[in-house]
Amino acid sequence: MKSILKTFVFVLFILSIVACATKATTSVASLETAPTKEFAVANFSEDQLNQGKTLFENNCAQCHKLFNPDSRDAEKWNNVLKRMIPKTDLAYEEGRLVQGYLVANSK
Ligand code: HEC
Image 1 (cartoon, rainbow, N blue to C red):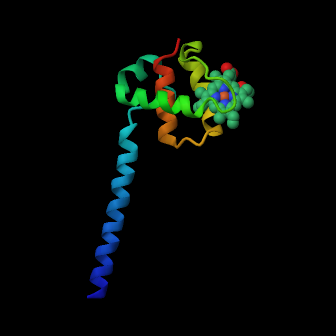
Image 2 (cartoon, rainbow, N blue to C red; image 1 turned 90 degrees about the vertical axis):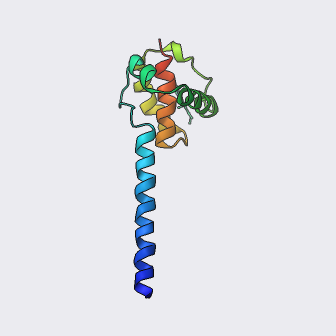
Image 3 (tube, helix red, strand yellow; image 1 turned 180 degrees about the horizontal axis):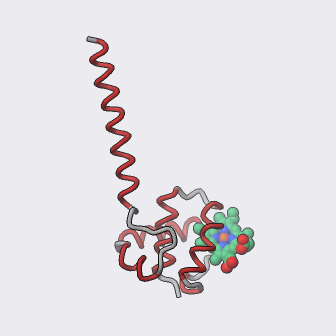
């Protein structure tokens, strides 16, 4: 009886891991590694772009002023963000939202 319960708890545990992993990969799954402006505009919802903007404003002005999204083109932003996102406490998915916002509004 005890082992049945253990098995049940174990299965629930696995299921919850699978559920979380699936969720994490689907919500920003549409984002390429180095998105073009057209790609970001087409694949990010308004909600995601707004979240990206807020995360950008709250995390990217700790060391310097906020740079205007249209101060750089998509390629430049993709390169700069490789260096800047690791300087922040942003989780992977949050970093992707910031990238989406900046690239979608780039030059
Ligand atoms: C821990 C401090 C720190 C944080 C946080 C930080 N930056 Fe920077 N940033 C720097 C420093 C230092 C430089 C200048 C040296 C360099 O370019 O690497 C810089 C330079 C830049 C530049 C100009 C670089 C270029 O080559 O054009 C941009 C644009 C930029 N940061 C954007 C961002 C964005 C967007 C974020 C948020 C995701 C961010 N930064 C977060 C420290 C930081």
